[in-house]
Length: 310
Ligand code: NCD
Image (cartoon, rainbow, N blue to C red; front, side):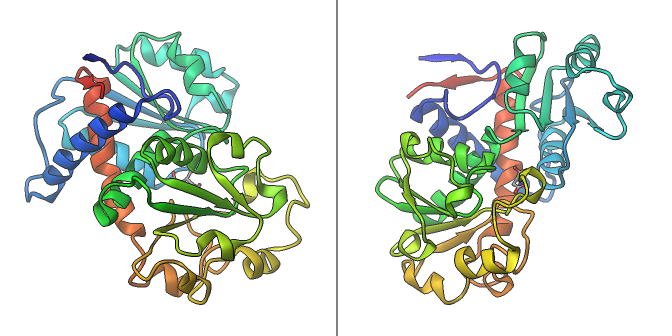
């Protein structure tokens, strides 16, 4: 059975089959990015608007390149350069953009639920590029693509997600995706940075990093999100690093072939030791490469393709 893939708002509402279909398509898109001419005519005549109302380097450039490699016309608008800085509401901004008949709006916003809110009020497709502390679906998809490249099927694999889980939309989307793909998900971080409902999402909670990464196939390190934190959640970054930092000593507890991931941007020396970030276990830049492929797949699907359900 197939259904039109209207929006991509979260991973939670996708089935395992849908996730695998996107990842399969991303693999084909990855091959396009490996060619010397990195462009196919698939989305010629389509318009994509990136509305990035929160800081972004990787996600924004990745969506832009993805759209351009599919021959779509892409424009990007940032918070400081938009009329939201003059007091216009998100809904007004988005309705005005929708009046110009784009095919897709890609939205990054600091409020959880912002993409869901606008999706029911515009004619175009909406893709969530990160909403507050809620979800970051394309990040989880590119993370899964990277893990599958190194580990094959994720069924039965152990993935340890370490750090500031409470403020991480990356962690939430990954927990949904990984549990649907059959992985065992562990999360570790200080109690003040661990959401109360995390166990209900299917992850096993650890209060210390060492048992969480022991025998793990994948260690995914999260950025300490200082911009989203109230004061006093951690004593200081030095202490955080000492107890929850991933480094060349504690990584030895993981499987010998374990890979190290980070969504970026990295606080070097805080959550992740620089030698490990740049070392042979690190797949951090491969994540970035897969980001373009996954976003090409998603843009293709929301701009008119269909999605086979498994
Ligand atoms: C993440 C984000 O913005 O949620 N970054 C990204 O998109 N690669 C993670 C982060 O900011 O820590």
